[in-house]
Image 1: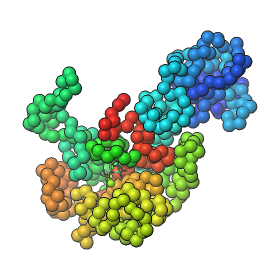
Image 2: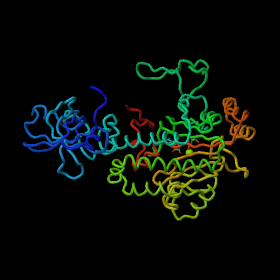
Image 3: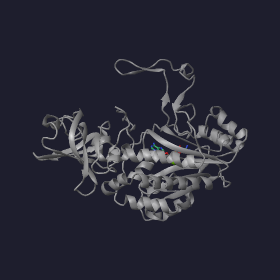
Length: 464
Ligand code: 4AD
Ligand code: MG
């Protein structure tokens, strides 16, 4: 068996009369004594191939094994489909059953199972309509990302997963250590509390962001990006946070906050347009079943300008509104998800970039404005999601950056190499991080971030 074979999406393009084989997993089987109709899917597109099997044309014993979830191959002739929708269907003439799926035990039986239930069978849910579609959209968005950057001469940098520095300075890191040992009962024991005796000779963690590392390459290669998994030990049980998520982080030398906003807007629109073109079948499904008006809003975003306002303007808008917010808004407080969504959804009605946040609520590396109070930060907010992107122009002045690190009481020695970038050949530069799962939520209309990644990791959740 070779991996090269005609997939179901290709069969739909072939002429009636062709002799073909169709491999896949059975969605449903129905019919009468005289004829059976099998819906077969192999993940290559949203549509199932219909297979029509006349009684007696394949072994009845084998046909009994064709149940929901079973893995099979049908050989036969493509014929014009009398039904609407597909041009062709397969007249089944031979059948091979690779793997049965006992109907009394196969968990993915019913149509319309809840997303919560499906999360508990994440190893099987990709065979269903929704998660097959999510996976294809996710793949395409990742591919579009690399295409976008390749077309603009950005190099992909593989930044490390294990790191000793806390990029965001928010203390949400998972420790990486070989000093902890589980015993037979699963209890953990600390072999030694001296971190010098640990694997790396000092405390090490899973990265919260590849930014600090990717900055080093922007100051040498000019335009770069990193795209990989990042980790945050935040114990928030929200529909927008994961403990392990993927982030796309471009970083550009000779670029300021304006250029950064331009790239963020261009990138977001590009990926949306690309996925709309390449995965129209899947988006159609989400539009029908998951988020009404999905296509309308994506089309709108792909073609209209993002609003740009400052944090101070955003706070004024929020304070002047009649909306009852759970959290009060004052200049200096961080915007909560409810505020972000009100701004972009209700007040402005399209993606909105908020800039110039108070320095107290943003990370140490952001470029300081001359007012002494704000930094050149930018958050891109989109309807339904809230914050999709966080970024900034970086502080390129050594003295200002050192003073800020001291002010925040961060361990300056640990950042020696990051400070070297300002010591030697510093340049204005900027970048951002886009949460890939939030983008997939936006593209699909899925409401819970746990349902747009194959195997979600969140507090108390590390099955599979
Ligand atoms: O705003 P954040 O924390 O920014 C950074 O990490 C910067 N170092 C990025 C940079 O400038 N290179 O995170 C960036 C984005 C957020 O806007 C959000 O979309 C996503 O990452 N994000 C999460 N997504 C899922 N689960 C979480 N726990 C997330 N935390 C952040
Ligand atoms: Mg942020």
